[in-house]
Length: 573
Image (cartoon, rainbow, N blue to C red):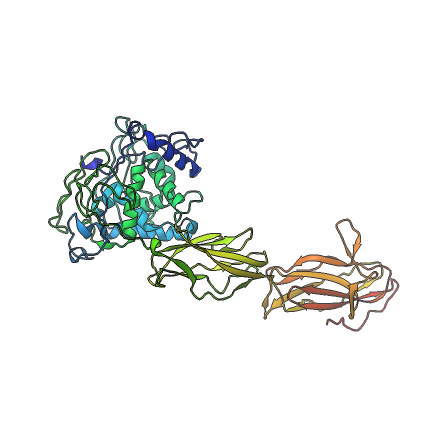
């Protein structure tokens, strides 16, 4: 039935005996850590995954492979024109609403989980093998499928056995679960991974915006970095525990990365071959897509999916086999010969501030020409709190058509000194490029006392008025600046005095130097209480900060029986 298309078939033990252990080991080693009662993971790397331990319950999926030719937008499938056919460059066309959902999901994950580096093309690749991009984009204006997309009943008869977990709320089945929607989530997984991607207040697996965002979060669980092959493969395998599924998704991912174009909703190419051998849906022509046809059932299903980029006995661009045996040209990454600096300025910042300059690199081929669409990873090396915006120690950026890529801003932590930021080409064994980032301590260039009251005290007593100062740097409040307060012998002798006013330590003992002081958010420091011993006269308190700002304040101690109040105001130098 049409309602059953787009589901993954759980591989039988006989056909997967060799791959199961490798897949299970990789999946377990990359497990996201979710241990809910409906989606628990095995605790050992060599244990076979449970049937429900995937986004889709390992339901069947479409096995069609993309053409070998680079995607182009033929006139018949340009945006706003009627839909095309099921062959050639039309495969690169993605229905407008579906494409918009993928890109919005990528944008949100870039903001909330930038370290994951989720490309929207990965969502498109999964959407392709799961539902043929929501049945060629048969969705309404809000992104909800016009008809439910349901997988086969997961009753253990040729599929995984997953008894009902949602009382039929999502899949209409109160006995067993079925994968639901354009991204084919089983109800138990959707229950915790569902998202509201279109802001309508609902989490609907049948809505492409909700489903695409949920898929993005599902793939980005834990500390996965999808710009790295290990993280990417683990994420895809967590969606469906099948090596063939991994290979198929990777092929579509590479194809979409080479280029796509938008086609009207309802006119997208729908796949034919499925992993369970069942026929795909036969779309009904509509006024917006005259003459749209579906490939013959199973016509594009290869006898054995080939490894991404590798050779097989058939030409994936021509379902059924037969075709060119020309060698596959090198990818953009494979053509990179070296990585160069692209005009990065001096990387200098004060602790807690953002760097004014950003790391910029350029990937070039052997002829010195820039190579675009290449992933470059930038990593803060070593144990330091220096990081990129968002607190990430590593980020991945993609070069533009000139081969240039610019990293997000760096932000200094509280660690000071020189640190290394390393740029490397992802999936390419080439020498990296190191940059030195210098973090200077927070500093102040001026100190002023906030009060004007004369600081006096009788011998043996305590100064009534607290001492508070404010630090500034270039006229602005200098927050987080380290300072030291010392009761010194004289203006010309900054050594610690051995008599006169003093502070108290935690044990109540007299001390005359306070270290480790730090200005607050407004640049202020308030000193603790100051006491006087039996010595009388005028004494000096000197406060100094990193950056060279100093302030000297007079403290006057009178005899205990003194009755006159000094008329002169304390001076500060």
